[in-house]
Image (cartoon, rainbow, N blue to C red; front, side, top):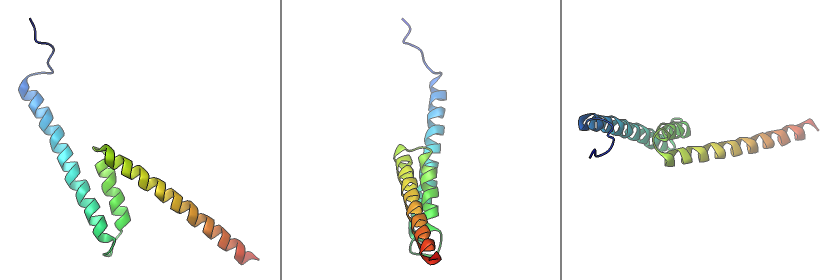
Length: 97
């Protein structure tokens, strides 16, 4: 009796696994380095928040938890942008009078 369908010889399956794993490790290292560098830039000169968002974007290509954090960061950004626009609109109206 045939044991069932296989996706190819064991060597090919192993190579596919190694390529997938290597990509995932590379994404983890690069994204993690960007996030850590961004956190350091929060107290050092540099665009800390921008680098953190970039690191999360890299991590989100492979990890669902990073995609969730990136979506949360986008929501927070939009909320802050809306609040800032409202404050600026109120401030410009008060100057007109």
